[in-house]
Length: 218
Ligand code: DX5
Ligand code: ZN
Image (cartoon, rainbow, N blue to C red; front, side, top):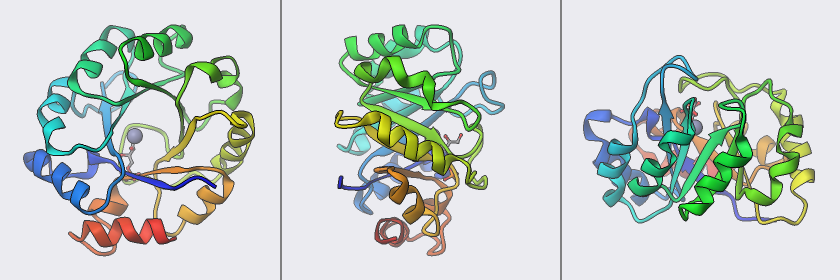
């Protein structure tokens, strides 16, 4: 079995101290830094863009896992690659040409991910499996942190794990992940867990290391 990666989402961080927050989760044991980019169009909320990611990039040497919830996405991929995104994930629902977006990401030297909203069936990734390094299963409807985990996605995680087979593709889950459901999503086949509220506002408030460890131990 693969090692579990924990990717705290800085959407739940203190935006006035974003660089320090990145350094703090790095020191607290985060494996990846998850950055949620929202455009107020593909999702009903606006967060931050490539210039902010560029500004905080020096605060950690760990991989920056950039989740683009924007449409259109193709005109912005290069800016995120140049900002220092190690992994760039686009939504299957964000445009008509997923294959092209994924090729663009890899051609810029970043790893390519595809994300699926809760209502999107896993079949949409069938013909791009050789173009991706990561699948991101949304376990909430994207747009906001702090929402409740949608349990129907457990079945989708299991099916995608089977589809991946022996390919070197990480299977990430995002939305409502806590120490209470971490075991169920990893048992279903997830190997990378995003957590925003559970890390930044978890049971051990202000103790990022304890919150990350609780998810990892679970
Ligand atoms: C939702 C984002 C998630 C979210 C996770 O649109 O993609 O990364 O911030 O936050 P929690 O863990 O609070 O659900
Ligand atoms: Zn995310």
